[in-house]
Amino acid sequence: MNFNLAQFKQELEKRKQYIDNCLQKHLTRLDAYPPVIHEAMHYAIFNGGKRLRPIMVLEGAKLVGGSQENAVPVACALEMIHSYSLVHDDLPAMDDDDLRRGKPTCHIVFGEANAILTGDALLTGAFVVMTESAGMPGVKPDNLIRVIREIAEAAGSQGMIGGQVIDLQSEGQDIDYETLKTLHSLKTGKLFQAALRSGAILSDMNQQGLQFIDIYARNFGLAFQITDDMLDINGDEEVIGKPAGSDAKNAKTTYPGLFGLKRSRQLAEDCVKACIGSLQEFGPEADFLRQLAYYTLERQN
Image 1 (cartoon, rainbow, N blue to C red):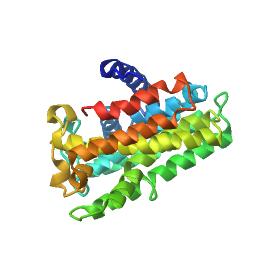
Image 2: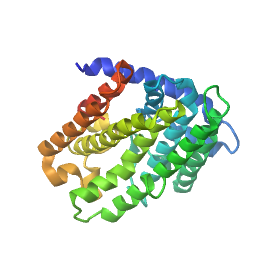
Image 3: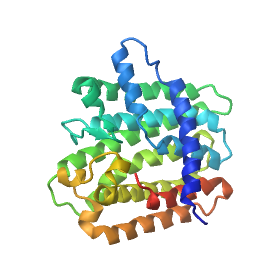
């Protein structure tokens, strides 16, 4: 498959705009009482994110010919959970970052206590939004319950939060490749996996299909993290929206730190090949996911 970065970025932007419009409809109004928490929630959500996780929810539905509209509430909920995790990641007790995508982080603008509550509100609100898929034509209640459980597990102590704990414990420590891989498969990969699976499950994908997309999501998450580590070293600060070298500042073990940039690039390329291979049972309906995998190698932020 030929990959044209400029064309793909246009496609990605169309999907991002669609998700942004949906988020505007599903978030509590900006001026709802008490206004400060809702202002902070909107600030955390609308800060230039790529919307990869909600896009993957919709693409998961597309793989089975399902209704993407039915999956929109779950897609929005995934972005709310992702955004909450970033708000908390940036806190002084965590990564202590002042910038997120070129803008002051939530705790810098609204204060640390409000930032903590903003993350809490986004997480709990996400599960309210997910239930809005209930009753939509073609959404089976059992499938929606399964999706809600999978997302909760992916975000919890054996998913994203578990990965964050390992990340914090590993600061200043020499950790091996397997520990690093486990850290990121939990912290980053689990939510990507839940995103792709959620859209597919809502659209009634069979178990074999789910196994294929699991392989895609795991490898995509790893490729994304490796390239993220590389951008922290050689990325343009104006483009990545935060100071380069933050991993080194926080004494984090990274793929380039373990293997160097050249070997890290090769690992990312191997993951992309695995992504493409996992989609061989699908036709043109998986083309966007194929290109998304290639995009991880070319992205600049």
